[in-house]
Image (tube, rainbow, N blue to C red):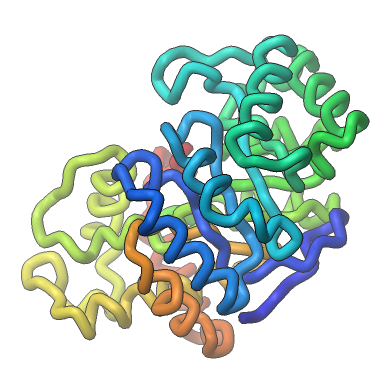
Length: 308
């Protein structure tokens, strides 16, 4: 598994990381998560990304691999103390409570990264949330602090120069960040985490799926109609063809300048190894990468912004 230096943090992170939302939202069992994460770490994964609002994701990760704490970098997020959709809370008190609770759930005395989770530029400008993270860093509860978000809010976060890292959307169906956001992060030597690099594998559905991200990416791809989609969605892709699209998608994101690690979530114990095999090849050839970028520039509408 290829590793890259995570910007100014100096951490060496695996190119493919694990995103913890699915194991929480899809009700994965402790047995499944233990099998999945330990096998992935054995195979070279060293980035585990989760959040306090991904239901019991933190507890599952803590139970599964806390005994191997030195074998991976642990990232979490704050801002939704009572769960996603239950109301944001960016007060210092809430952030401090959430960090303490996350450490307990993850069964550790520190994480490697705490990120503000998709807060608005107005929240960032107030400064309270950033100061809360800085105090947690000074206290040794996190080694680094970051921002997770997209578009104008991500740009505002980057321009504060307060954050060590940025997590943002980058995929064949979500390319706004490539021109607008990532160059600013690169200038500041920030670590960059690409979220949803496989665009929710929207090409596995011939009919418009439900779920905000899947619907959005499905809609965009039906307009982009990349050659490698082989006539989709009018005709379904067999498993081999769908896997090939997934490979192109992952290799596209890993080729984007500035990206250090890509987080992909799954509840299937064998999925991480399959994804890792896809990116064992080199980055996309320049001609293929440029063709995908050119199609995006030709087709993308002004409202095709990064998906939070």
